[in-house]
Length: 48
Image (cartoon, rainbow, N blue to C red; front, side):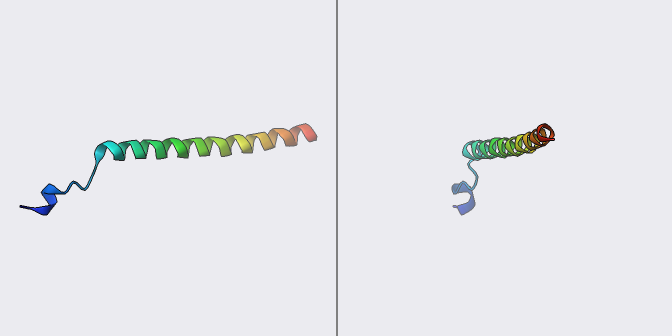
């Protein structure tokens, strides 16, 4: 009996879910930083 055939090294169902959640978190963080940068520009224009 071969050990590599009896031992699943990749769980595709859980892996895809984790990668999807990671991608959503990265996109959300980039969107938050983008909005913070734009809100600073708008405040600078109003104060001038």
